[in-house]
Image: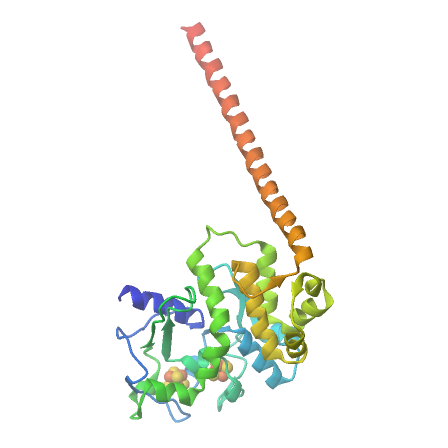
Length: 322
Ligand code: SF4
Ligand code: SF4
């Protein structure tokens, strides 16, 4: 497996992976014109096999669409159908579908298939065609490199079906383009965190904010309109109008806000009178970190001195005894 393929596997895992067998990537870099022999339909002997024992990470758009389909608020959807997880190989909190206790099945699967098929999550649409988009983790200037790869698991009999189409045709059939667009900025946040690694600290408050904005747009809307948010940030009237009612607009706005607060990306403007307070807050935080480091240093130094004295006392004792 090449480095690119390993990276692409990581990316695929951000959406979907089986705990038992996360790989099965075919060693071929594909384009939209590459051919794929595959079909999934109720007639395949493995029908719904891939809806069991599976880890399906939900993107903010998945959650939005599914909870609308079910006609319930975000918090109810989260508590009934999801469980917390970390987005692959990062410390970013997210949610995955909660499988049933007995059969380890997706709660939306029946012997007749998926009960939320037209609103199924992104991961279910991509399978078995993964996509690696190296633009996601980098800056906007980075040259875009996108390719596709096949995940061919032994239990999946769809590859034995005669239907042949291009990757592009398959993706259009699965309706992934709109998902790509809706998930892009959010996935970019996860990939940024991944590429920064743990050296860059992310506070617990920042992680909580990421989780809230990513999973519960009702709460994020309250945060925007009912906290001091609008006293701090400049948000024009047209945007306010859109995000007040439109969930998709609010979700896209939340990505911009998260990119700004988590990674310092441009796109949010702080009110001039608040900048001074913000600078003061950052300075106080830095001072606190410095004070903490100084305290730890002093404690270490004291410990070193204490041990040194003990050693010297032991040496003196040995000299006296001999
Ligand atoms: S959402 Fe539908 S397609 Fe996806 S795992 Fe569940 S039942 Fe299967
Ligand atoms: S295992 Fe493959 S062929 Fe079988 S239901 Fe899942 S995607 Fe379709």
